[in-house]
Image: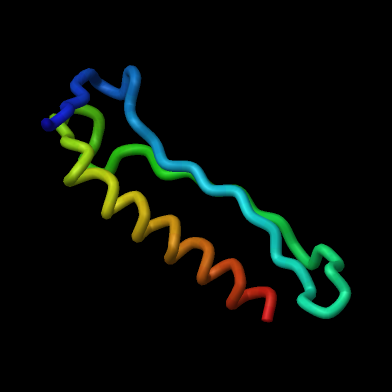
Length: 72
């Protein structure tokens, strides 16, 4: 089953992630982050979940990696 979302940005799907970096020994919180990716082909496209999700997940992973890299 495929789902499609159409509509100039209205009701666009998004993928959101929240996280915390903790010190393994002490449990102390070192940093928190939150990021969200919405669509990837602009405002006037038909996107199936199977096409959209990998792009959103990859972009979020890259953003989190860059965030951690800047900290350490």
